[in-house]
Image (cartoon, rainbow, N blue to C red; front, side):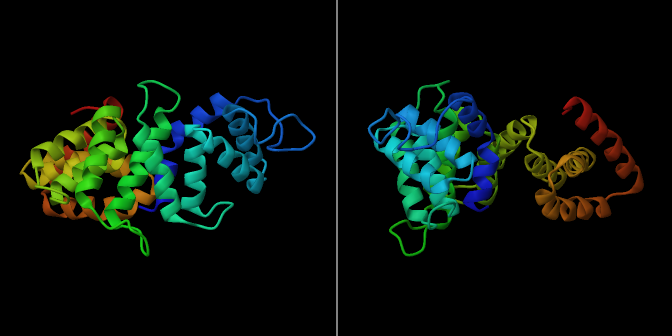
Amino acid sequence: MPIRALNRLSGVVVGAAMMAIVGASGAYALDPNVSVSKESGPFDLFRLGFKAYREGNKQEAVEAYRYAAEKGHTGSRWALATMYADGDGVVKNDFEAFKIYSEIASQGVEPGSNDTGFFVNALMALAEYYSKGIPASPVQPDLNQARQLYFQAASAFGDSEAQFRLAKMLLSGEGGQANIRQAKKWLNHARKGGHAGAMGIFGNVLFEEGQTVRGLAFMTAALDSCAPRDRVWLQPMQEQAFSLVNESDRRNAVALSANIRLKGGD
């Protein structure tokens, strides 16, 4: 999954945090007619950069974020890294984004602080970079490192996307030994957190283990609740399983899938 899509997925909480932190007030970043300048405090620069970005003044936003990042402001570092990763207001530069995300990750985070969302997002972005590497840079593919980062985000912060990605690596043996039992555990956590893709793969694992009705029910429930981007791969998987069972099992699976959707059943 591209970094931009990843940021959209794991950045929902981050975006909400930014809105809460910034508030409604503020002036344009580095506007000579107001009191804010590059010598201002990091929070003021971050707030004004965020306001400038929302109003389409991305060059001003980058400038404000950069000054705030130099002063150690985590939210500004994350915003700047994401703009480099997306080529949003700056020339796309994945290695520059990687370096900034690495700075965020190396700092750690106080549990429950406003920086938690930024920290988790940085872990996820770094894992994505390590899974593929960055061409023409020192960053080479390192699946073991990617798996460790997903594990950190999945276990310490309960991030459902990290749990999903970790489970997929555990199923395939990427970055280490395959472990179906552990994969099922993380898929179960993620699907209970509302991750439709995790629900679908969880169901497929059960189906392949011989729990045909229950497995098909989870795949059907996932297909009924997934986002359009996931339907592309969930639908063929569910239809393949659907074609392999008898009519009685199909009916039982459809009935059970309704219970799973409505009650989060097991």
